[in-house]
Length: 229
Image (cartoon, rainbow, N blue to C red; front, side, top):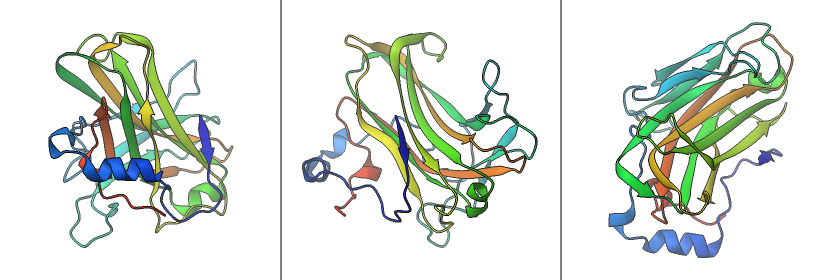
């Protein structure tokens, strides 16, 4: 499912029932499965991935930067900077970051709450539409190689000319993704992707921060302070 921004500069509006549930969620359940979700001082254990055939081949990089952080506070940690190189890459070429999360033991997964914050420099959309996606995939093994059919979800946002704001962090995610019944996973992979939808040969950039994945109704700490718009 793809969401298209229309110039809104405010965060997502959360239903009152969800906000109330977040407010009373016990601390013991407030566990983010993602390691280094806020990019405190490095990119690792996140790694670069690039689109490859049969999709259009991507070329780019992923680095840690201290120049951007979702809190915008002095001395804040940082974020992941993903760049699609300036080249004649075909539309839908992509670059992003991925992390494989190995569970201590195989676990039943009935629901996943995942997402991230991202920022798109204004010059990106001047060259044509871009898209950012956040994705989760579950695997039966502990190394993110044996995908469980149907156990993958993705949320994306398309950004068009005139919409990006260098001072605003957008969000993408799904608070209630349900994999197939009886899913038992040994690992999960989280991805954050920048995709080129236009035809320009210029470079494209995105910043990612506050990535989260919680399972079976638990609520990450980063979501417990959300208010109502």
